[in-house]
Length: 130
Ligand SMILES: [Cu+2]
Image 1 (cartoon, rainbow, N blue to C red):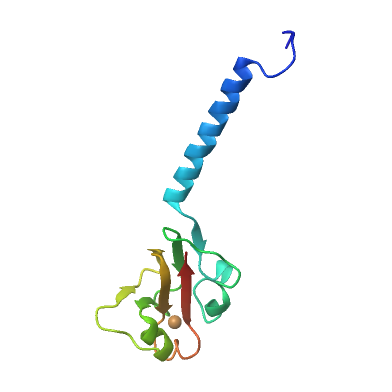
Image 2: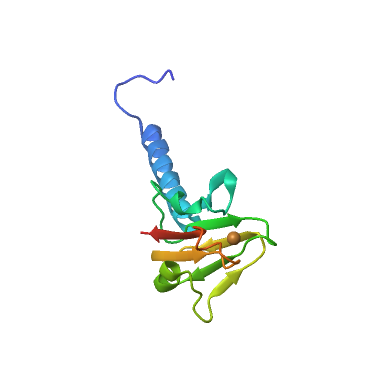
């Protein structure tokens, strides 16, 4: 820049404003899309999943992806009683694709695997979304 004088020029101000607006729009888009989490990370949805949410902060609109071998496991969204007792309330949503995407609503969401004995062996998950 060869222009003289101190202080920020008008073009600098416009650039700064454009940058601010762009950031603002990006943050809105990010909020809409939410964050995608892979349950169990590289292990997938498994018996080690109950501790997986530890230290994570989920928000409504985030997506959980459950990856597993479909003929070994499944994913059922249950209520708190179902989670505590390893039971499946009537009408529970069941996922069986092995690559299931679930968008979180605000509050606690409970999941378990209904294959024989799996829930009692610890294959269940509760996630809190703010
Ligand atoms: Cu299972």
